[in-house]
Length: 178
Ligand SMILES: [Zn+2]
Picture 1: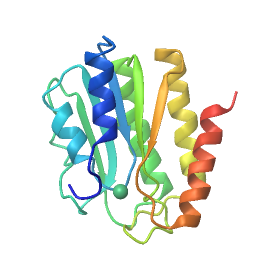
Picture 2 (picture 1 turned 30 degrees about the horizontal axis):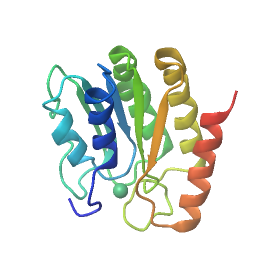
Picture 3 (picture 1 turned 30 degrees about the vertical axis):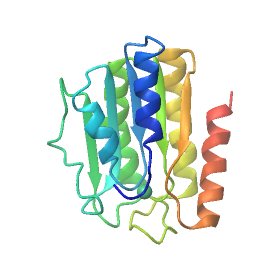
């Protein structure tokens, strides 16, 4: 809805289902904005799972807890402006990751936006670079547990270039760590 022309992750997810015959694809979205386009696809597609942490209220205004898709295949964890590491990690640990594990994906796609970093000028979450490394470690664990490590990350938001570079590098290093 203004930030992208094509929704790369949603297209990839549908391609994995329809062209490659997968039956369960998960999308994890930690971009600070709600992934409303991905949710629009997932909420009528039970072969998809979509979970998002995001600031609310904030553009685009969707992503309430009550938006749960079909068979609860959509999990929204909105966080208020000012929420920092502890609150975000709790949302991941108590809502996003358990639901991801219960879904038992054959492929995990990540909408890896880094605009929840405290230095980002477009939003007011207060994440640290190390939080993205933590997310990488947790998602790597799930990928190894459920889908032989099959995880694809797509770069999304991040509008402070220093924070974006540092966070993306920390996230990728954590994904690759043994
Ligand atoms: Zn964003």
